[in-house]
Length: 463
Image (cartoon, rainbow, N blue to C red):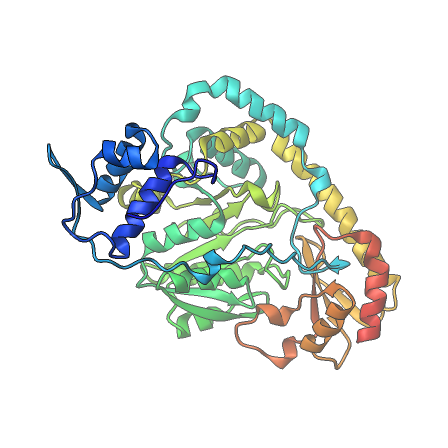
């Protein structure tokens, strides 16, 4: 063994001895069965302590490179020489990640307005939870989330959405995507899942990545086509009836009733109601849920706090019909809840003390003003008369139907050159259709309104 150790190289002596012997074995300098020097002898040669050599020998023995024989010493184990080549990526100095491109105006971003986050109240609630819950924060979590949060959500749903559910029907998880994974395991991969087209792309991707059959169902008259659900053999329909993404349409009551009849006509059919931003409705009362009108236990309700508090909160929940809640407990109750107890207790207090609903009231006022500012900027720009605003009464986005012959792809390229990021309805279509072109999706929740007049004038020039 020809290696040496250097106390000033930045690595511990023990690590240098371990690396030296390991490399000697892997490159064939030390053969299988060969005896290593005694710990004392090697310590004298390297001018280190016997304990340091002993620690290196012990680690190599634990990993299987050496075999220790009592009163005889350490021998090279049966290891095939194969010196690991340092990868090119590891050999070169790591380069800093390229900075994400910044846009003057980003109509694609769905970030929320940070200026209205209730930092003071949230921090005070966190301190209160630390004092009140104490050692309970260290206990294992229930599979479906802490009771206090599920109870607070049940109370909120009754007050705001008119849904009567028990805490036992609610499951809390780290994001809607995670809950969707659980739902596939609960209902089965052998079922056929139907998603809206156009629609949120990740929804279909998650079903497909889990090995389930997924069909894209076109929208007709504000909702998925029941005829298409039947024709394509769908068992589970994933829909956004209160505010469709990205069109912004609301599913009419006649289609909701038809969807419920479809689910009730055959055993094993279910509706997944994704109510992702139903809190932000600016005209009239909130749209009633499909879950609330379901009497046959065929609707699974899903919602998230990412849209109302902050994307980084990553707390979502689903409400299962009672028979599915029992099945979930029996079949998937071995899973651990993926949201920390500290965050759950904090959110439970935030809701129970009325902070959440007051926060929602402020955010609705803020986003109504922001929406009005965006619409005023459109009407006061050269785009006025060249773009028709659609479905602006709810949610954090709306459409602008552009009067132009320029393709969406070309408009996107021209806008990129101007530092403007555009998003179109065609971006969310699984099957492209020319008649869907020229529908600009305006996501305004995190937009910089000061730059809007100039941006809309530039878009008018592009079209």
